[in-house]
Image: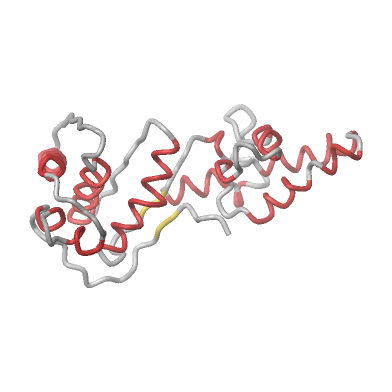
Length: 212
């Protein structure tokens, strides 16, 4: 089963520490759960700077070298601020690979660390999602005119759309022959009319938007 695109919060008695130091210091929350964790002073200072930017509602710009632990340095203060003030926080990435790393690796680790006391969702651009409207139109108007060999090539896509929980086309490997056809059936702004779409309730893109 593919990973869902939402991490729910659970009832938790976790008490967030007042200081970020309790997360990052030797013997702190991270080091007790993560083998071979090394305390990095620059990582902790970066996290403090980001939290101060949140709290003071100011723009903060920072950079750090590879190996600093930047993901935790901005994720933990963002989560801490969000929980303290009951406000959502948006994290935007340049690449989908980093987005997937944050959502499927780093955020679940922190989620476990703080006893599942926050929720998180992942949202990508519209054309990253499988469009059920395009799929059904393809079955009705185009598939009947294809040779039998090409119809057989549709089977992996039929199976994919039946089992995917997210409709995220990133679930399909780059070398998978299904990928090009599935990309052809991706959602786009030109053909998307949510008010009149018969598949809006099961639309992967709008489900992801609602969760986010």
